Image (cartoon, rainbow, N blue to C red; front, side, top):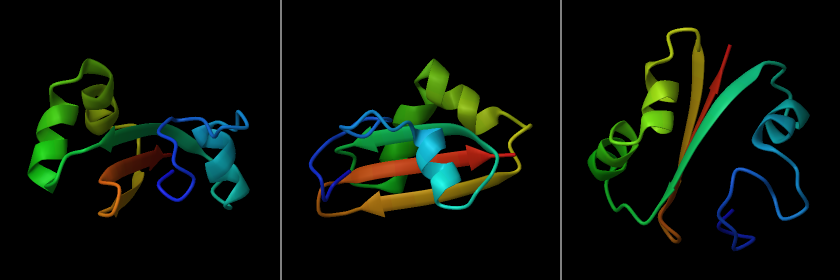
Length: 83
């Protein structure tokens, strides 16, 4: 997202987060949280936990794996969840 200057679960071409994850080799993606602008992990987690949809992903016990990324140039954060 940062290198291509967009902020969305879908790429500018319309590729969804789960399609991207499958293409990267992981067969069972489940959810994604993204955020922009927060400067600390505590701040982004507080914001996600104050959002019903993001919080639901974090607390979903059916998810068994997580990938986490941060780009400190653009201050974008991503959590990808899977089964």
